[in-house]
Image (tube, protein in one colour):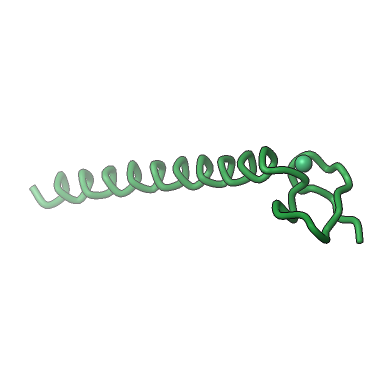
Length: 62
Ligand SMILES: [Zn+2]
């Protein structure tokens, strides 16, 4: 059975592949790194918005 590596789109074996669904450890790490970076950016953006909301409320109350 052949599958496509989600990172580099190359065909790779599903059986006997310790890195599946990726073709190699490198592609697995790239995908995990991309996911972690994306999550970090989204969380940072949410933190900034939360700070802005808090500041506006403080100004309105004062
Ligand atoms: Zn790959």
